View 1: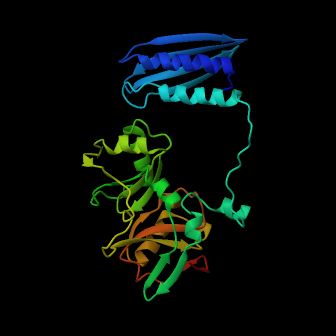
View 2: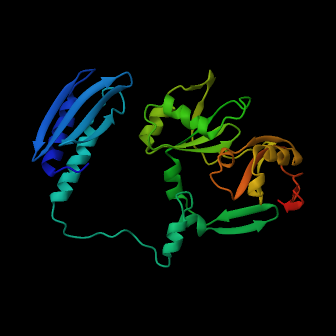
View 3: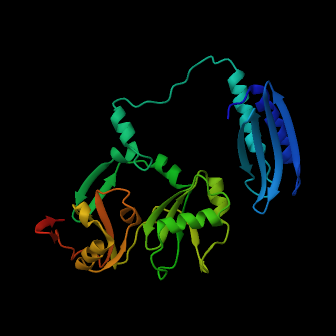
Length: 304
């Protein structure tokens, strides 16, 4: 949606007026900008209060909904951000401030790195001592800033085969403000929730949540959140080189049983989101998994 400065100033006024009201009520505002008509409404439903912004130009219509973050919190934060944007736009730019750059950092390396891989970690000093790998001379400030707005959720391990897809659906139906949350599976019915900001994470962690009558426990991420001191009784393995004509759940089960006992096939594998490898959960700690398995099909032997 493209709007003029005049319309943005009107929208700031409407958001401020809507924020003054407490409780469930309906208010409407309207403005013309050349041949375009804008409507702003404050309304409510069973999920809470929200703002709707409608732009109409002839037969074309664009609609934006802005829900309220918490009860009676209003939309002052959004109006403030729009005001700052307007002021920044009209001010004369006297100096161009460039982002900090690092000498020697190749563009290809910058693109290849992701949010979990910081430059500090890549530059860390790593040495092996006995059965230990010692990582030193590293600062993880940028990574910890990302993780300090992350929450670890856990369910009882006796609940069988809770998938990442099921957790995502549960978040959509249970958490009012689920937009912008990234979810990662940690194993053993534990999941990492990365929130867009710490306020959203704090709002969620203070609630009480249940998964099919089982409590879904939430706690702030800690450096030890993903570690375990227990001997593993199940592990994930990757099986590389399965021919496409044998890519099936039945074959996955047989391979898993051959490696100690099939438990689960990863959802990404079942959906064929990629065909680089099949990821299977099997019983045991992985020590007895053979280095390769031969699949024989129609006179051909495939080593995987």
